[in-house]
Image (cartoon, rainbow, N blue to C red):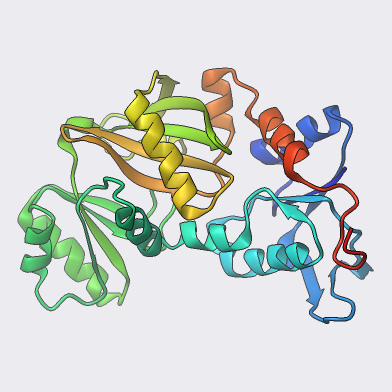
Length: 300
């Protein structure tokens, strides 16, 4: 098969591992920067171009689209979908997961347990918003934040009011969530491919921080998840319509709580901690579902 990896940086661990895994299994691989692509949206002859050339037909596309380029990146992915390429994650599912508010609403609608969450743009009553999630300490998140950026733990009510008012002054969309104290700065990242949790690691925040993101200096170790945690992770991914995702779960006194579903999970932390060939499993999933040779122009 001919596979395209949509990525702005071919040197990233995840991109390199996916390319290596695909080549090892006999596939042709191109790494395509979505921001240098441009599209001919023509019902008679749609196409994707890059640097003056029309890109070939790809049997499958692996989107590794950063949150900063979600709008344009998913537009390029949609064009490949129009041309008959099979996406490892569909464009509509990625945009669904990237919208933190929408994804939480969809998960809640399916009865998936979450930290109590308030959403606001310019709250007229900051005190009521704080009470809504159980008071301080609480977590304030920018809706557009990623990898722990734009996430603040407010340990007192006064601090919470100050942080919320500061974000309000910036006209920012924010999520206010209850702080799960018993998690102790830990969460579980479940890596889901299709209908299986193929790996799970526990991430621990560095001393003095509560954000467990490995990009923020967190540590990771292997963990055995419970049947309930497995069930919750799979249901969350299915709800958002993803094929591959990282589901972040907090262990609370009332059971597993889904904190976030990541549509483009990094592979380095999971692979190095678990020793599992995640990239290879992703390629095998593509082999099972893509239709080599199919394209929109011929219909088969």
